[in-house]
Image (cartoon, rainbow, N blue to C red; front, side):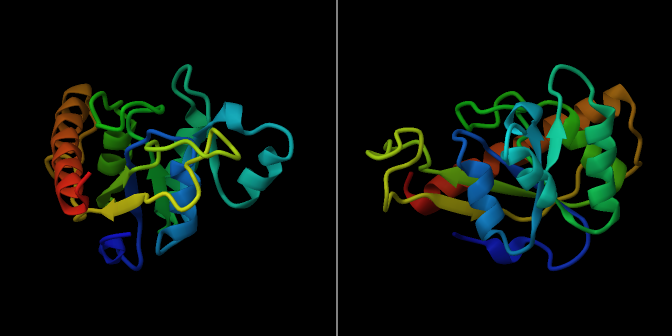
Length: 187
């Protein structure tokens, strides 16, 4: 883990995390310097996981459209001065921040919370022998926290054009952080 000290010790903050493996969120929940409230797809809230995830403050999101309950919950997390974790691409993928959705920009502009980019590298390198869906035991997985930044133009405007511009700026910052994280870790 590199740069965890970059997460502000208090106040609202958004962790913007690349997402390649189902272990990325739980790994961050267990290692981040502050408790993280992630937006997690509603499909994960099944059986005994439902009360567990809700009990530790995770937020279910219906990705089929705009989930107003999840949006309100995320804004409440930030208004209370807590940490919101978000996978800005909205799903697992290559982990390259290539196709950001507008949610991250909306939360950052609306709340004014700083965004801390987080690169998770190595979680898909080798499958485990006991549980194929998890990384192999003793695999090296790097978590690299970047410099906090603010999104938007400072006006607080939440028009479609302003959010689109903020999303482009955020994507540039996240991609640059990912490149730097790969350089630092040799991945």
